[in-house]
Length: 129
Image (cartoon, rainbow, N blue to C red; front, top):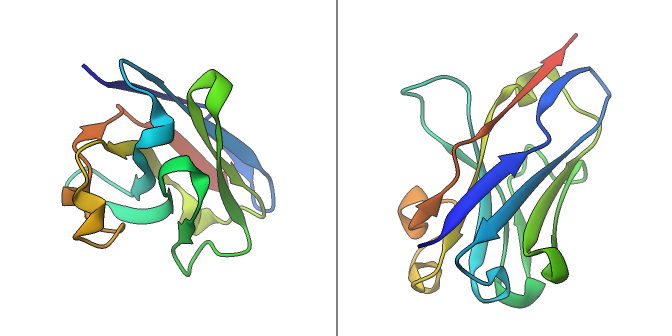
């Protein structure tokens, strides 16, 4: 069974940086389509932030984070990262890591939550002005 564990969240001021980590067990992430999502409050829509195709060949970003966030992967650690720079108060949210291990990303947009069949528990990011 695939387990995803996020870490690295916290509280920073506007303009600060954080690096989120998503470590997997039970699956090799190099063969998964990986995504980061965020949710501003329970019940709100989860917004796709960034994604990484298997093997790291392609990256995808929401317009709101392009140029500020970078998704990457460390194969040796079976971990995916989200480097977040120039943070803004509107980046405040719970951030979730997700993995597609069954190929749904071939049919649907990476920003669709239904693509992903595995989710972490989330890590909170708070940006103060």
